[in-house]
Image (cartoon, rainbow, N blue to C red; front, side):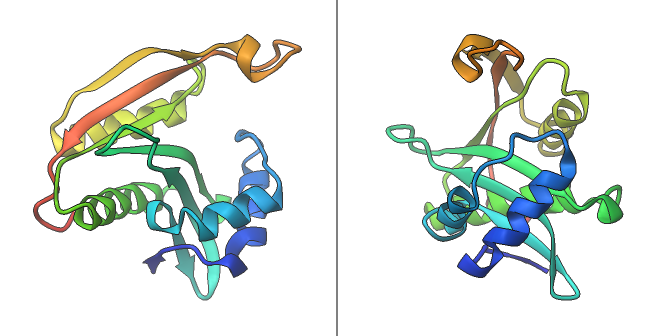
Length: 166
């Protein structure tokens, strides 16, 4: 089942992100804010009452028609079944419909060496027949004073027309 996150999901979301060993782990409080204040731009996948996937996102200020996807995580036991793709399709459709059905541009920052995330977003663009572009965005110096974090260029996908359910 795909649904909006709820306050009670914050701890499970944090555990899921921690399990990836790839995503930057944020505080439970940050995930609580995402599950409450940004529930309309986030989604969880639930199987047998357990959160098995999450996409956190938000609408960037002053950029109408944009959904910034912050983190995508799927439990290791549930990977490979298309849950992440289903969550993103569902989320983009829901956010676009909530915004009056206007086309939506998806943005995300992804490190150059994160091949799985890049492939995920490229597949989304192909599935919807829209372009994906890349431009410089966050530098390693902005993300980590020790420069152990890679640059994170901005990926822009779309605009995605969502007149019919995805």
